[in-house]
Length: 251
Image (cartoon, rainbow, N blue to C red; front, side):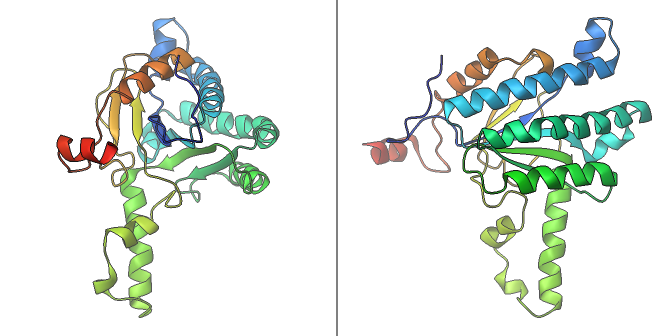
């Protein structure tokens, strides 16, 4: 069992975990159930993982719930998902607040119905000053969307002569991306056996450790999270340096 972070010392555990919650539909189909049953079961996994991350002292958890490409799925499934997001956030927001969790949603909001937008805004406002675990839901999100909106904002500043093209550097670009106030993900987890990042955090995952598991998201338990963390702590993160340099810095 992975122990909680010791705040008095540097921990080997990730500060920020990003997860692609994949396999809800296939989990349901293997059990002869409709795909929406998998999404409902997947919502329970979200609760388990949030609880586990809070107990372990993880600083930030970002869960990709719906991509910009997912609008192409069957309309009844999309409609159910939007209803599930709305009801889950509405029911959970007070409990999230009581547990000192900060809740946010990233992604394009204008495509979401007004009721869902209002529920998101209420939950964000309620929890904005909380100082515990940062839980972010990526909803109508993609890495390309994130980079595009960042470039649009930078271009707007240049057009207004508030900055010039010479001011553009990696640090500036990062400051306009979603969750720029948080550390970039240290650990990326994808469930269901797919081995790709699928347009998620394209900029932010540059030096993230990648972990893939065949377990479908509804079956992803705290024990499965521990497996990912156990793998993570064995990795040497070099960020372009040599192993010898890293080892010398750790002495």
